[in-house]
Length: 116
Image (cartoon, rainbow, N blue to C red; front, top):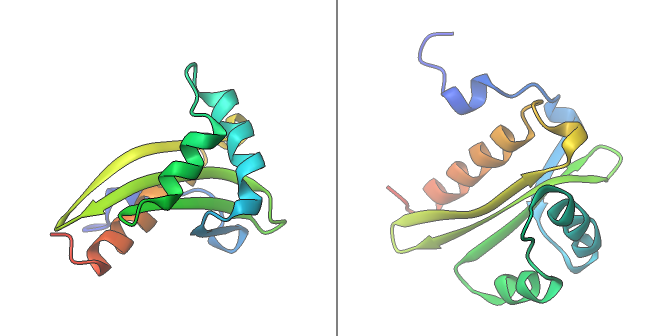
């Protein structure tokens, strides 16, 4: 489709199957499991907790319709800029557009906050 955002073009997961929302305390265990599976030098639970305390940090989790967390992103919005700090997706969900959906959601939230 001409003029379509490249981020949207890559989404293969059914949008009805995916919910992206702010990461809650109850999400940390599943997020840490993904973190440890995906990264060779993973963040600790305390690092996630400290990140969530920052007023400019946005910690999001992507859940399936069954409310299983399959990915997450962490980004900062400072003034009129955003910075992606971390993005990860469970191995079995990789290549299905979950990271693209998280990135698209990040861009929408950033634009809403005045990022240019």
